[in-house]
Image (cartoon, rainbow, N blue to C red; front, side, top):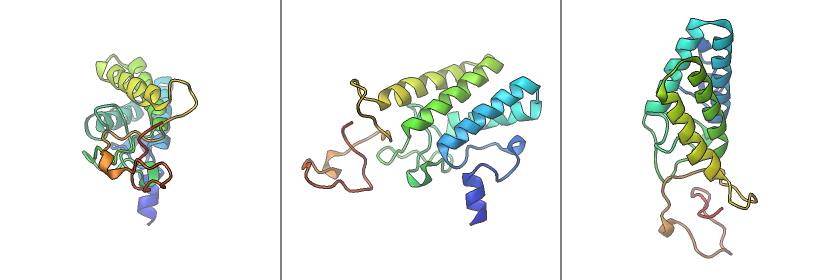
Length: 168
């Protein structure tokens, strides 16, 4: 439906009226980082207030303890408050980058340790952990739990699509 697509694209309401993180997590977090930049440059208090509301929604209701965001593989998206399943966690590595950027921008605007804490979680647990030590492989998604009984140890068998890889 148009309402679902609109929310997915973060244009369901004007940005100054938004209060929850919606839609595609990577695109959303880049938008929010840009909103914070615009608020800082222009002094737009309504835009800054929206950034605060959205940031708090992410940090307290839509972010994993690791700093991962975007709990659904369907649409690589935010879902609803507290929908943070461990084994099906999507928490895309690519989303850690704009989350850290958004947090950094908010930290530059106002001194609140929440912003630095979120940036640190995103960098250490989502960005750095997303790439192998040799730099040749990466995790696209970052589940918080893996049950080996759900994964075949036979490498000649194609993995089931609903389960995430267990190696980089």
